[in-house]
Length: 428
Ligand code: ASP
Ligand code: MG
Image (cartoon, rainbow, N blue to C red; front, top):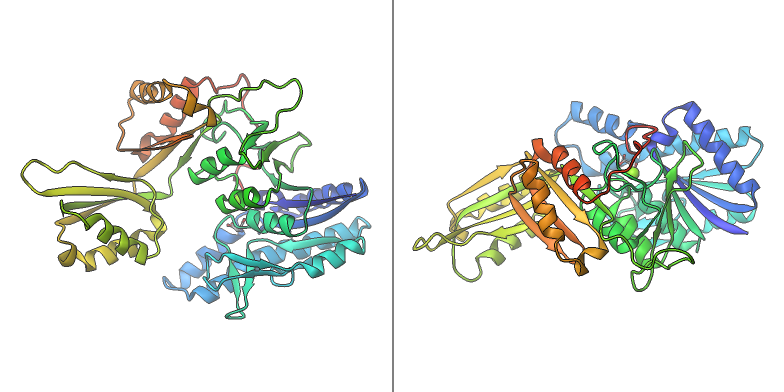
């Protein structure tokens, strides 16, 4: 008997029909002789709607109350799914994050999991029940309060449970057939990837591919949980994200030994660019600036320091960070303006980031040439560049991002014959 954790995103449970479809699938999985733990997201756009509602009341909602509010979305789904499963003649019990033993730190809105003790889940499945868990939430032992894990966090709930319960697989159900070589909503001829290493998936998720929560991929990699990303709207085999101690995909018989050079193109519109203009070009200034930004709890991504104009003794430092962290970082920098000695700050939210990812690129010269040539031919100007061993990223004007994605996708021969199917359309 296998233990399978199945996570259903918001688009899969967006209405009663969807919940019935999911219930049927879950019951079929159990009837095939498996133990099943289900993790659900909030229905459809519920989380956005709740955020919206709160926004109509206040611009400064207390973080604790925001988590009380947002965690309710997943509780609606879990109870309705339990009802639908019971209706099909199977037995099911739903659990909140805290009932499922998801213990987190006390940082509301971006809580991290510190312990998973799913005793009640184990008991339920050992009795032959289907256990349903509300995703995206936990409880802090410190504050005894409900916390949430950050947007998209239900994936991470599912993987954390799969790791603790030693599940055979964690299935992530969404509204496309798997992980694609680019977002099929932007590049319609993107192709489904059958297997991808967790190292590459990590770069894809970190580069803005929203199909999986970044922390879920990190977690799965650390604990060796195999992920199967697939659609709840079809029976097709999806994408396997395979962790391996060497970050190498295990080769099955008959498969080519060399993996493709490129696995895909990811894009991201959630970041802004900050330029600190006129920074004194002396040791210690970068440390000072990034110390201030870190103090504001912002996640810095790309960093570029320009050469100082001759004789000026001053330089510009640019970096990107999530738009949601922008205001706090700018306020903190401005407060230290005199102390650091810079002239001014430029802040731009109209940027996009495009990344090309592939473990094969480290041993293939010419990848960057082809990449930049494609952008040039598409008339896309480049603002910033950063690389890792298996990724090249650039920042461009937000308006040109989709064009850039299609150009690079095509230049690396990733376009397929047929258009990809997007069932739900929301990407949740
Ligand atoms: N409902 C939450 C969100 O929309 C968590 C999730 O779906 O994973 O971000
Ligand atoms: Mg998601």
